[in-house]
Amino acid sequence: QKEVEQDPGPLSVPEGAIVSLNCTYSNSAFQYFMWYRQYSRKGPELLMYTYSSGNKEDGRFTAQVDKSSKYISLFIRDSQPSDSATYLCAMSAGGYQKVTFGTGTKLQVIP
Amino acid sequence: EAQVTQNPRYLITVTGKKLTVTCSQNMNHEYMSWYRQDPGLGLRQIYYSMNVEVTDKGDVPEGYKVSRKEKRNFPLILESPSPNQTSLYFCASGIGRNLGDRSPLHFGNGTRLTVT
Image 1 (cartoon, one colour):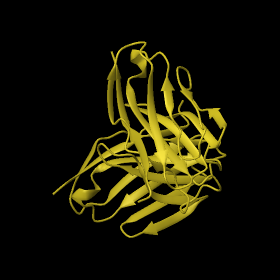
Image 2: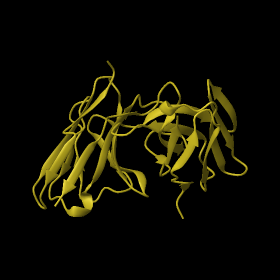
Image 3: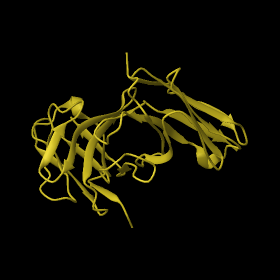
């Protein structure tokens, strides 16, 4: 079993929809939770970062962490065609040297 | 502009022919690492370096070598490439202190390697 599980999609939604992306994990030591966005032919870039449990909001994006269920989510409100990308969840117990990534969910927002 | 630069972007080679993929960062970051990205497997760490002359194995180091002689450069060396090393490779760097939203991993734009 992988440490981090992420549905690969693809997920196709109409413009303006609310998008929910999820990851589950098995390592209780994870306490840093991140979402990276990767456009085609580009490297991943950090989108959201959360330490421990709770919610974090940044514009149209909300990241949620439920450590009791070992489940994290990224919500995108009012989705735009420019949100079309692959979204990678990432987690760490603390250091740079061991960041574990999910396999990524490919999202397409249709105008 | 702060960036991680990888070269080349695309590389086609034959089995057994030694190659080097270069990585350079201009942010004075202490931490650098190499990942490979494969469909269904995601990003997997090959090697990482916490500082100059300090390197360590990641999850999939077999068949790869690295060196960190200077802070800004972290080349990935495949001494005898094989077809199972066909992949998309990413170099990343970070400040090296606490992982956080002000100190994320910065990725290059990738090197697509094909070994025939």
